[in-house]
Image (cartoon, rainbow over all chains, first blue to last red; front, side, top):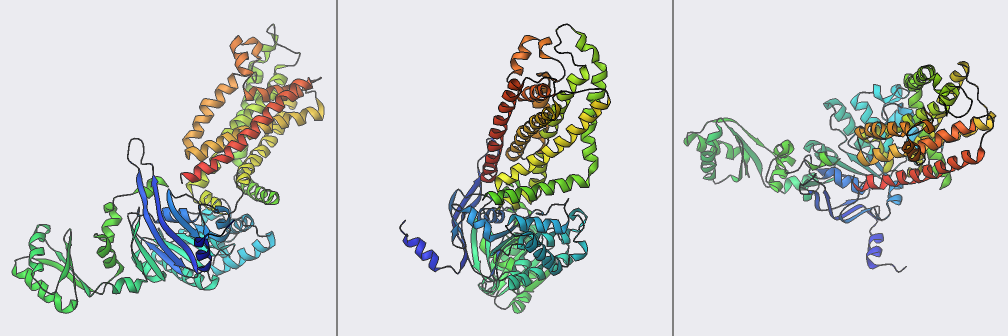
Length: 348
Length: 260
């Protein structure tokens, strides 16, 4: 077999843990309906040893991407390399290297915590002895020792999720996929999980691919992140890079009356220091280099036009602003189903 | 490779046994229906053997018992796919499929578990029939062949149930299997009534009914002087069918993953 130039180039660049190029995946939309596009040319790369976040609303294609990378599903076209191995061609090799924590609970509620961990270890080829030792280590790390010999169905949501992550770590994977690890957890359990994930990337020296629809989660945990909308990457970089790509502060004003919005847009448009005006329901958003100085001017302009403002804020750019800038809609709206697809739910 | 498959099968079978052991009431409930058939039908229809043309000189209870064993195996295994449905509803199946877990082991472990249930239940049914006065010939070899036939029947229909679960991914299809397939299979056989006494077409159809193959094998092996040629021919047919079904069902994992 002759080595193709492409293969050589890839083995030289082993620093890449994940390399995703032009992934397309469509699902049947049901009888007589057009096919639903989950991924529409998704591309990104993840360096080894880092935490990478895929951020997007429900249905953006995050779970589909993780399913293809973890060999659960196959792409219609495009390539996905995991640690330099083609996930579509050599799924068996990829499966030895990865840990997978699905959006749904991956532990068996009828088994105890220890039994779940030891079974996962055995299935990954560990000896009974090695699996027992590793399970004890992980139970201690995740503070699950008191519940180790209880059936998982008696666990709280936070405990069950920690056990899920521990199961994914049993065989010391090179790459761990965490699909929405904190969805459905209360704030306290979420904060605990964040601390675990941060510690984990350090302890295990592995690559973590994390999907989330929480902006603050991506901001907190990810070294780099990609914002996904409708199956494509719309922005990629470190959280800081993405935020500093936006010049200036966000100025947000909530009108008392929805019907005032057209007049408000006209009035605010005349204020020279405001730019990137967008309207979303009662909320008027704009950007300004000096937010604190721009706000009184903007309020005065609206007041002069006879428009009443219920509240107004100035803030440093957040990932929400980045999202708005790149997709044309706010994250909250996309989350409510403003984005065109809830295909992922239907397909999974 | 083979040792991996064996290790995985053992670990996954143990998981199913643990779950069953933790809710023993299910194991008892599985026995209620066959007991009702055995004790009620055994009494209700005990004079059918007096109908001219009813073959052999066994009592009806002795005639019925191997049929009940196979009905139990058939009805129990129709629900085997339930454990896959539960694993798919959670993320357990997805986790197995993204790990190096042997696909054959995922399939065979559920069949081993179902077969162990069938063996236990068969011994209990035979014990109760014996207490009610039934006496079987065939000796230990006859008993062994009855168990083999019951295990092959269990494997065939558990694999079918698992394949249906993987392809349809909901419990509804299993209800369909148990209602639309198992009940006709039961009546188009000699489990309750010799087909010599039914309409002619029933006997013709029954010749192609794998459930009937199991009944013939089990009943034949438990007779005083078994016709081993007939018995082994039917056990052989069952074995071939079971092997084909297990292979087809294991292939269904690919279809499940393609559409995941």
